[in-house]
Length: 310
Ligand code: FAQ
Image (cartoon, rainbow, N blue to C red; front, top):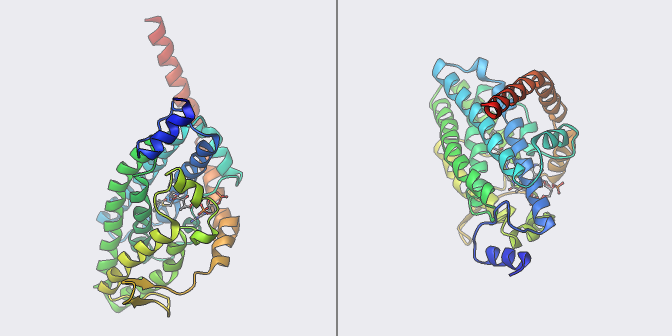
């Protein structure tokens, strides 16, 4: 069998493609783009919640939030490692992010204005992330699929800690309930946008589905998330900022109004509320951390020389 035939057979059999296997250049490039974008999202995604670590209302909430934000750093590292197996270096990927040549999820360009935002991010943003990532556990590239299994376990805790914050606020004072409702009003539509453009507008879906990189389309995942989330919001006594939201008896699914795609594309193109600030913070952290990378490299170099001379 040629490499190409082997690749096709692996995809057809639902087996995993591994780093040393032959793969089409387009498959490799699509994976690098998606995995890097995913990794960057985890790292940039630390900023909105990191912003509240010093202001968490209790010591317990602070400890939980610190663990959650730290988990996101870990997710970024698993994903950068998966991308590295495709022949790109982590430094190269950082450079592409810092210069705006690679993207990260639109959702992380919105501000966290109140403590309720932290609950709502866990409930809606991590909730949306899990729906997408559970499907990605079945992706055809082995290192990406395996990273997803571990990430999904941790995301499940993230979603629950967010919902637990929302539940406490929903059962709290009128002011706390209003704060929670305000956060839902601001995060609902951006969370739905996380799944990407409608299938008809999605540039990569057809090819990515054929290669089994993507297993479920953007719209299908979005609908799954809506069906799962609306009853959770109702349980909390919340409303959603969509006058057209209704349960469609015929389809058995929730139907929504129109998504504001102008807002989505403005954010994706760098003009969301906080795009510039997020990247500036990231570049500063990279520059400030140069000495740590140099020290780690010098330490590793010293130990490999010691091992060689032993
Ligand atoms: N933001 O052709 P498609 C997390 C771009 S979860 C920005 O449909 P594709 C956890 C897309 O890149 C968030 N850009 O693209 C967490 C493409 O542009 P390009 C991260 C977006 O790739 C929680 C163009 O639009 N999760 O971090 C977005 O087939 C809390 C056309 O779109 C992942 O990345 C967007 N939302 O499908 C962390 C999951 N949507 O590249 C911290 C893995 C689309 O041609 C705190 N990724 N675009 O210039 C995926 O599943 C896919 O890449 C999609 C997009 C579904 C996001």
